Image 1 (cartoon, rainbow, N blue to C red):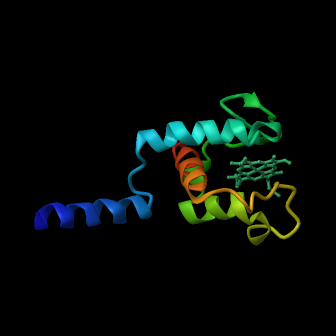
Image 2: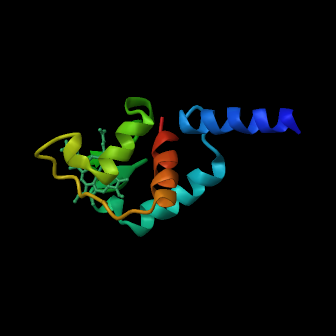
Amino acid sequence: MKRIAALSVAVAMMLAAGMIVPAQDVEEGKKVYTTLKCRLCHSIAGVGNKKSPLDGVGARLNEEEIRKWIKTPKEMKADTKMKAYPDISDRDLADLTAYMRSLK
Ligand code: HEC
């Protein structure tokens, strides 16, 4: 039992650090991306607005930076045109971030 608890803690820490991205979250994140219409300004693999492609964003930015870009983009760039999503739920933000992190 103890060993299982220790293992869950380790997995939780790796999840928090963005070291492992569960496929399920990525799939949910794709739905959030569609629902929030990110593609009006962004493209992924050539689909969407090619002005701001998000391809490779997971290799450029860490989890913390991606979360900020979505929730409080002005913390990343004061005069940014990026739309802020201050009311996004923690779950949606986590899934969306997982999806962004998978774009390498
Ligand atoms: C109104 C247009 C618009 C919408 C809608 C929008 N974005 Fe953005 N986003 C931008 C622009 C423009 C930038 C580039 C920021 C800059 O340089 O000012 C950006 C930057 C980003 C970045 C950082 C990219 C990088 O390469 O550094 C991420 C990540 C991002 N957006 C994710 C999203 C997600 C996820 C959504 C949907 C929830 C979304 N954006 C919706 C316009 C938008």
